[in-house]
Image 1 (cartoon, rainbow, N blue to C red):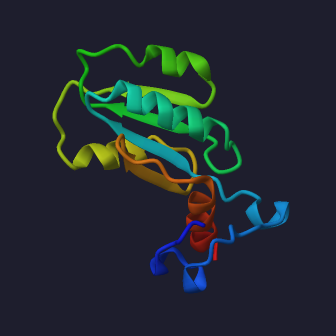
Image 2: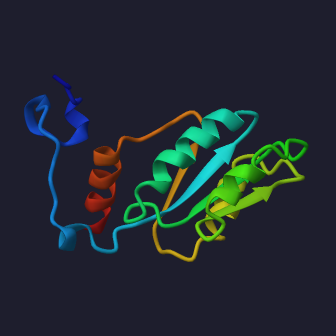
Length: 132
């Protein structure tokens, strides 16, 4: 049984995964801004998972803060319509998150590092809460 923490929003740590109708989740998708630095394998896993959820993550922007590493080109090639790769040549510090978010065409942006992967139900719940 999965025990969710109280802040997850499922009363009592229930193991029940929330269910939503198609109209509940219509147009809740967010652009994912994935901050990357020297973890290309992690980026591949994260992108692969999020590509399977186009209703939640219709676009992905990968901000590569290690421009000498071009090993992420294959990730973009897997779905060039949905994935954009930005290789930063300058260290913008925390500002790079905002620079990447400014590239989004969608009103909702989810910024995450390359060492985090949200489960589908967690991401859906987060986006539904934002919609409400």
